[in-house]
Length: 436
Image (cartoon, rainbow, N blue to C red; front, side, top):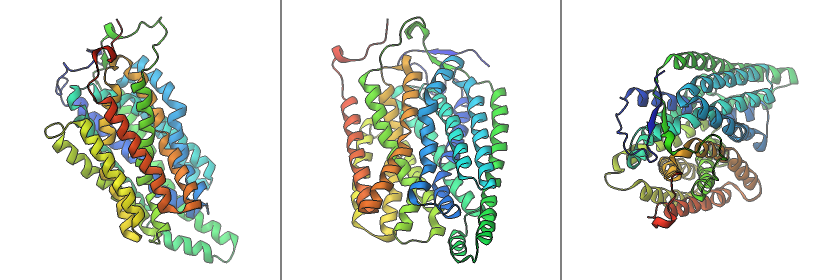
């Protein structure tokens, strides 16, 4: 492992290729893994709902426990990333993900929903460490003005993994969910229903166990890799013996914006199958709707890569994305059937460049606190579990279409206000200063 490379506070002196393209390619592979593991939840929700005979609220425990792991593990992950450095943290993250996949697969094989949820919690903990390490790493790989562009490249890889995941699961285990639901309903006795459930759950358990083995192998490979450690300059960090500085409003409010963003992103990717079923569409298509959302996100990343920063700044693009998301929410509410579901899928295009623009805005002027702020932002990913729960409870009372508007419209508005306010030129007296 090479020695850490000290960076200035705003990391503007580090050209994109200062360390070669190897670290960037390695991070791209990790973002593919993140996308694959994260977006398995979309097709998993309707599957467990059928296989375990769950109601909507119980089925949506899948994203809840997965994303609540970010709250439970983000601070320990931030401490580990600070002490060991991002590069040395990666094998531990991949190992935790491998363990989570193995527990989830074992829970599905045994027909134990609580054990499968425990596995998803563990998987989320491994992902929390991975994201705490890789997001600031990518941000620090080059100048701030192109940070959104680099993160967008990672987003392309992330969404490619997310597109592949539901298609793989749909092909391996979820191609006949309508038939499974009908068979369980028409089964003449409890032993027959149990046998049908066991057969369906086994078909899904083995892919999870295989992914656990692949992640364990990746952890071993990452332990042997030689990545440069990118850290802010020690001259600009608080001494270890001093009490850590309070985080500035930019970081705290940025975490709130991130909470809302991840909530609407997961709503569009994970809840779209349930939304489609409530719109009268076939259950067999649920896995493909998640792939539709992620394909739209991929198109959004490619569009952002083409336009930022050549034609438009990352801050202004953020405002356009929020406006597009708000418009699609209203359009989804005004339409029915496939048209409404496609509008929800198009949320992916609107959402794509929000994260790549939001993360650098939140970190700006606070490179010395990047590990703490990154941990706070990762904790905010819990919005991906909480906001779909809010949506599904609202939908049970007022319907899916109005619930979508009530959850997404205020979220886009508040994200836009945050992006507009903190991307304005600040008076010198109010600018955040690096500690002396």
